Image (tube, rainbow, N blue to C red):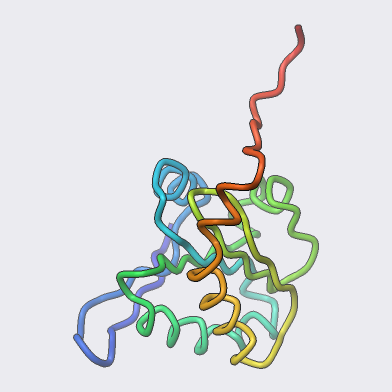
Length: 139
């Protein structure tokens, strides 16, 4: 799987934005760190329009929030698991739990506000929410 990277304008370090769904699940489920997820596809013009702003916020919130872009064409299980019905979908996770969501192209300031609010209220929201157990089986 190709990795989407760009160079931070301030520190000149490479920032990794794209990973597989399995890598994302492993990186975020066992940590209390905040993460912002962009679910989209290469054929989605609105996803391409929002990507520069997503990159900008990845550098602005570096060290506070992990920004990840998931291609739903390559990770077909992801939309079903997180209820992605349209692209682009932006989700904010705290402690591996989704706490905020926005769908579609939007003003970039709304995306930034979602991240800021998620940082300030996301941990409290995650503590008060019910964990989802995907290991469903027959008894």
